[in-house]
Length: 254
Image (cartoon, rainbow, N blue to C red; front, side, top):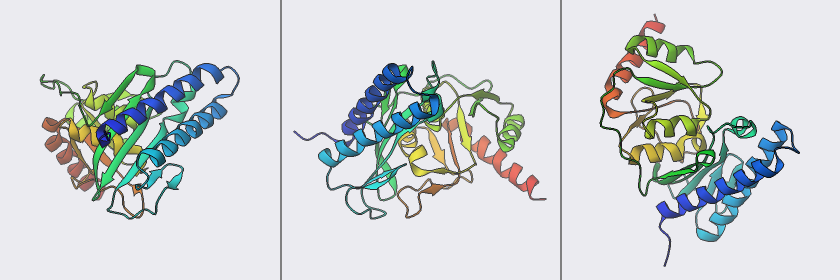
């Protein structure tokens, strides 16, 4: 019996998560943080590429580390993976805000995806995405990077009275929205498709709003995998956030 793509994405994300946890446990004391992150990235990449070559040999794979398998034809089927999203967080003891991304795109949309949060023992997938909380939003919470929130996000937070919540990788931020731990994630500094394809796929399946910052669609599997910006949020916040983004842009252009 063949495994469907939802199940395969979840299973491979789980296998990569187990590989990373094992490496983190057994080599953290012998490698410096940079070397540990590089080793984890390479180990998870090798596992995913080899597994997809066996399970879906007709599909190309687009990874942070390049393209493997058959020639990629933008618009066709392609697996988009980030073997270790949050290398720095992975290499820091005790951190849980890092992830594994496995997504399948076809006709420029993510159709199956899974995100593993290894240190939290969780895999979120399009085969059974979490239900969204029914509670209302009293004060919106926006996920931002640990170092410093971008100025435009601070402006948006001030405009809508939101709280900023610091956390690590892009996958951790988007899945925090999926899990109801925060209400929105906005990014304007540029990413690649593998940074967001899987978590965006899970977020869409869970019923969240996903778009570019101007409200246009997120398009995956393009010839150039650069993806400049994105917004993931609870649907009841989308209009308010997009309006605030539009106003902030208009004021900044004066």
